Amino acid sequence: MALTLVASAARISSGNSGALANCKPERFSGGEFALNITAAATVAGDTLNVYVQHSMDGGTTWDDFVSFTQALGNGGAKNFMAGWTAVATAPAAMHAATDATLAAGSVNQGPNGDVWRIKWVIAGASPSFTFAVYFQANPAKDP
Image (cartoon, rainbow, N blue to C red; front, side, top):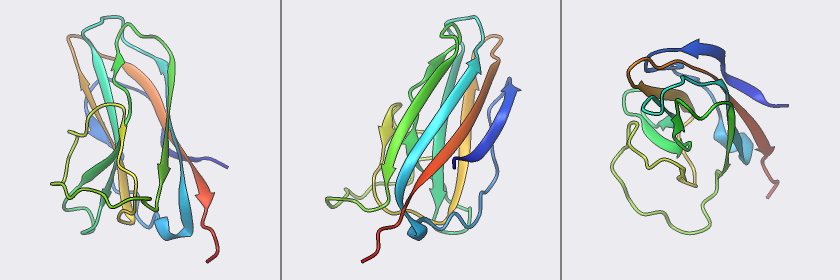
């Protein structure tokens, strides 16, 4: 069953879900994130960027690990999916924490902290986007 990380609502400005504590990524091997946009502004210059972030220090420093494809105001209803695995198959490059700067359409695979949040950045002349974010976990594999 998918978890609702951000309930569907119309939004006209940037914001975030607040800390989603105790996500306990050790309980699953990864999963699928979904961004469901049911209504978009009507101007092409209006944009929506949505990030899934984690924190290793209880919410002081945030780091993007999913950056959905950017939605345009004239794009209409869209569904974007992002597959994520909690176990990296190859060593990941070191990086500075990215707070709403991970390239659109990117996923950083591998382990992360157990405090998550969803952050959205809305820009444009008269933006309005109605969207929700969901997560479907894959159970952890027994050793």
